[in-house]
Amino acid sequence: MRDFVVRRRSLIAALAACVAALVATASPAQDRRQNAPGEFDFYVLALSWSPSYCEQASERGNTGRSQQIQCGGRPFSFVVHGLWPQYERGFPEYCQRPSPRLDRRIVNAMLDLMPAPGLIYNQWDKHGTCTGTSASAYFEEIRKARAAVRVPPDFIDAKEARAVTPAEVEDAFIKVNPGLSNAAIAVICDRSRLTEVRICMSKDLQFRACEEIDRRACRRDRLAVPPVRGG
Image (spheres, rainbow, N blue to C red):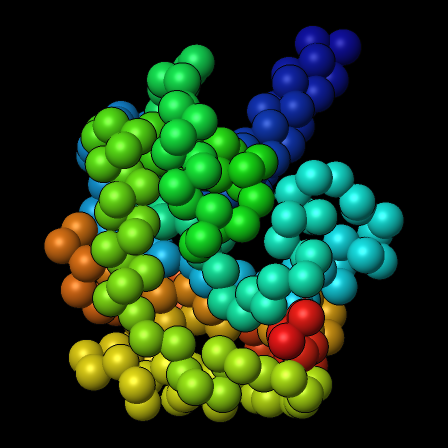
């Protein structure tokens, strides 16, 4: 009986060790600075293809105020999803709980780049609080980062639907942005559409490589690019 109990405990211990190893393998290692405001390595500027977002919202029946603003008559192409502090592995989020209150005047001032109030509030709570700066400084940094990236002409006034490869989207951005390389940009997609372009930038907003972001890029052969709405 005693041998049975010992074997049983050994088996349980072995199973527990296996589960722990699997969890450790599946989950990325947390940075030792996890969620410490101002402690990060670089930024990701995420540019969302607004026509794809609006198609997704329509398919899901989302008709809230944010969708009405972004998906109304104004012809949005790429809009800013966010500017995200990153570690070399992983990223911080929600670094202050509760987050400092966001002034409505800042929200209104950002609607030209981020045409959804809910998005602006969310980006401040989740990502902006991790920069270690004030809200006004964070959103000014977003404006500077966006100004540092040129959008290819074919994506500014895209009146016709078309299909592209992820490589073609990357190449188009690289062509008009000196210093940008394939190692610093990732094209993101859903099942069939271009949804986002993510560009890695140093803290002083220079293009830089980011292996982990690049690994998450879209691997599909062809992507639909819905046309700009209301153009």
